[in-house]
Length: 476
Image 1: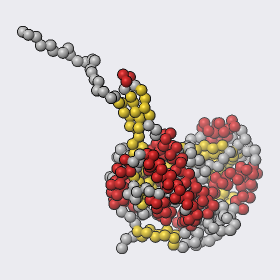
Image 2: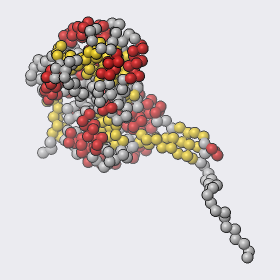
Image 3: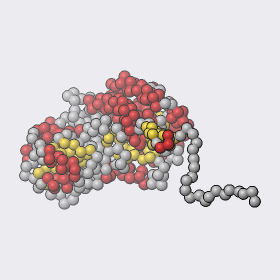
Image 4: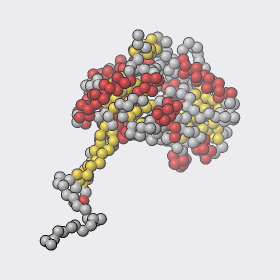
């Protein structure tokens, strides 16, 4: 009997979906067989197929959003924004492909021409996360299909139902079943997929530890593309803000949206020591008003549960560890129901802690650090091996310029949250947040490779230097 993957609703514990574990080798073989025909189609054909996919998703918006909400636990209003992002990704990717990977023809010497065109890699593996189980893998799949690649998509074992629904929408739109394959499974199947000789690359969104393992695994295969998006320990600095209430709202949104389960969520709040009390009071007011409830509750919640009981257990353990290191809770990470993974937003002052861990706490935990001046704030913002997102809240444009110039991150915002990056711009980080393969608008860059051709319609050749004089025979 085949092993099953079972998905349950975080908010209720009710079984939502189950399916057999797939075979990585078989899925890769199917994709390899189907790839040449897909690559042979014109890019216009592939773009129009993806536009039909957008229409299919648009027609299923309510059903899709409900499934995402139930499987992840995120509020239904937030699930609807994820479905909208899936639809919007198509036109953004078409525009990005035309801009980032265009065909160019240049004039060269002696009537020659230089052509720059792009080819697909072949068969690409996509490993998706659970926090945005449709939007984030879709951000790899759509540009990869436009470029002419075939895909094996393995969704997170925590959100397989959403992954299956997404793949069905592609197939309904006319993407051949062999061109986009679904691999159901857990970490073992992910490792098997990454190890297949038949893939030409892997596109991954997930934890830094998994990304490091993939980087090592791919070290001996430089012929394969590897794109990694690995999260962050993101700072938000509040300094001489004009509107304290607005700043508090931005901080709360940055830290607690999606129950803190965003790679761009603010993990560290950096403030000026002695001038932080009013801001903290406003943040606490908002924290105490936040509704934590199941996805379809009335009134609508700001936060749902984290993804499962294990995630909640780990976060509670980590929060206890912060207190053991000297952190002073301002609002504790409480768990109203021990049977379900609902957590309340937490705020903890780590200024006087004897140790600060540089890790991504993937949940609603915000650590505050008080510093003496803005230079110290920048130093504290950079006190991480990650480098995904950073934000500064200030009325002083000069401070923003200084922040932008000196903070090391791939997304740097001014008077805006750390999260909610636009899909029409590149998205990615430095340090342990990625491997310099930014996604979103720049995903086109890693879905195809450039080919340069020097072309002439006639054969002309000669060697001007380095030859002995030609031998001329005589009559003697």
